[in-house]
Each structure stands twice: as structure tokens, then as C-alpha cells.
Image (cartoon, rainbow, N blue to C red; front, side, top):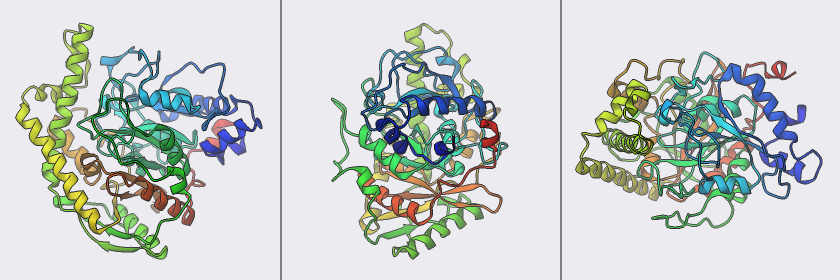
Length: 474
């Protein structure tokens, strides 16, 4: 189907609503494509039962959607978080976000590959195996939303659900030529079973080919849940209307040096400088500027918060299920991370949370002067498979590689500010490199407005990877 390749999710839904195609038309096409491509990409790890009846008078009518293998519960379906520990676990009900996505008309198709417990910038877990980057099958699509990004990057679907706790949407998007948006803290709810993830650092949203799909998806998912401890500032209008209207001329602070000596490769620096040139052509003012925060302290705080959250989740699940030795079911590096959590005191955890809060102050100060922050997403291009995997490593060395791969993304999780990866650059070898943009807390509308302007100035949806997917689907 040639038309399938040229449609985003909103265009698909429009055809379904106008009855120009059958309600399950795009569902069947997407399933057929996954059946052919997944043995190559290993992007999908669970398949769901597709409903017989599909609602047609809703925003995303008949649009196929794969969910990340963690974070958004769907009644009766598997969610294993990439680990043997949760093998066979099915959700008893929809989460709040799952219900909103369902009511919007998305047809849930299955789950995408993520590393164990979503704790890596590469989707190379031992339980589900390695996802592969459609632009170069010897490379990782990134993580932790690696399978989700690989599906969109390969042109199999226009949109997937994903999540971001340190850069887990933006990093894989930077490596797969896709658009990745991380909303502000609790713009999307985590309920009803929990109020937040990772002390507020984990954020739910999606990966898309078009900016308007991402904006429209946020329009139907955002808003506080009953009893949420805090919420975002209300938007002035819809996010999709922001995406369709260019911003005023912006003052943009650009960072092209790694924090505290972390090296940045020439390719990612050139991609950032190329984005700055485009912004200047569009009339924006760009200058070198760096937010002032302690990146080393933030890395240590992230490690502590992650360890405590992982440890509590693993131990609580094991106690509820009567599993005597849950660590035996984890990859060794993550089992050791859980062991370390037992030695972290309440005072240590509170200190880590206060570091996160200090980053909020720092970014708030930065955005008093600048409208937008620009930097590389990652420190390097998409890594070869194995380079970021945790096999054979202890927690410290694994985490050092993890943080060094994307030392500039987690501050947006810690501070709660929104950020996005925009596919504006490809290397001479044909690998995509994303540019990283951030805004003040609650500034999603400004980011979508800028993203829409960039998409119009330098369209990326027509770019396709080297994979001969057309031959595969024929």
C-alpha cells in the first residue's frame, strides 16, 4: 500500500472516520508489516488480541498502537517490563492513561522491546533479546523505548507509546530519525496505582513520525488524575493548535560542550550547530549558554532514586507473589543494583530528591533568560550492539556508560521540564542524529510550536532507512 507510507496517524483516522477504508484497514496492514519486519528488528515482544469492533467516531479511529513493555497497563494483557521476573504477568485493568488511549480510538496491538526494567539506553535485554536499528542493523535503536522507536523509524507505524525517565524517548528518537517528545512532570498521569514514577522523573508519552501526531496524542492523554499530589500548569489551548502555529522569534541558549568533561562526538556537535544555523535562518537568536547545575551530583542522585525505586518494586512484587529469590530472575547487573538499594538510607534518598529539586531551580533560572535550550541529545551516534549492554558489568561501570551516552537529557527529567528530540540531521554515512530542545516547566505549547516550524522548514518524514522494507512487505 503506497498510501500507508505517506500517512500519519491523524490522516489514517480521518480516512476511517470518512469510511474511505474499513475500520480495521490500517490495523491489518500494520500487523502484516510487523509480521515480516519483526524477525529482523525484534521491536515487538508481545502481541495482543485485536477487538472485533473498532470505534470510528473518535480522534484516533482505527489507528494501530503498540505500547512500550512497561508503564501503561491494559486490561488482560501482558506487561513484563523486559524481565523474567514479570513473565506471564497480565494487568487486571487499564491504567488511567491506558483508558484514555483506548477511548481515543487507538487499537492496542502489542508491546515493544525495552531493556530489563527499562534501565538502559539500549534495548538489549536478556529476556527479549536485542532490538535493532533500522538504519543500521549492527547498531542499537537506543533505549529504553528502543523497540518503539525502531517501529516508527522503519516506517512500520506512524506512532507508538513510550516513556522517558532519563532520556528514554529522546535518545532512541535521536538514533532512529523519529520525533520524540517528553512532556512536563505529570502532564500525563501515572495512576491509579501510583502517583508518580522515579520521584517524578518518569514521564509517559509517545514517539511519532509527525509533530502533529505527538501533539494530538498529548491532547487526549494530558490532565491530572484523581488525587494526584501536584499537576502541570494548564495549557492555553490545544497542543495541536500550537504545533500548527509558528512561534514568535525566540532567544535560544545552546550548549555544545559536555558537562564536567563528558566528551561529545563531532557528529552530534555538528548536528546541533546545523540546527542552530536553521534556527537563525528562521529568525531566532541563538547564543552559547549553559544552565548552571551540578551534573555529577545529578548522576549520583539519579542512581540512588533508581536503585530505591527498583528495589522496592522488585521486593514488593516478590513478596506479593511468594517468590523466594527474585534476584535470581534478574540480569546480574540489575540484581546487584537491587542489592545496593538495601544500603541506601532514608537520609540518602531525601538528599537525592533535594538534588532533583535543585535542578528545577537551575533550569527555572535558565529559562528566565532564554525561551529554548538547544543541545545534542546524545554524546555519540547510535552505538554498536553490545556497547551499552549491561552483560558482564557491575552497576557502577554500567551506569557510567549509561550516563556518558546522554549526559544532557536527565536534567529535564529531574527538573520536570519538557524536552524533545527533533530529526534534523543525518551523517555522511546515513545515520540520523537528533537535536535536543527544552523549555521551561509547562512549556509544551512553545516546544510544539517550534517543532512544527522546524518540520515545515526541513521535513523529515520522507526519509526512510536502508532496510528494503518495500521488498519485505511485497
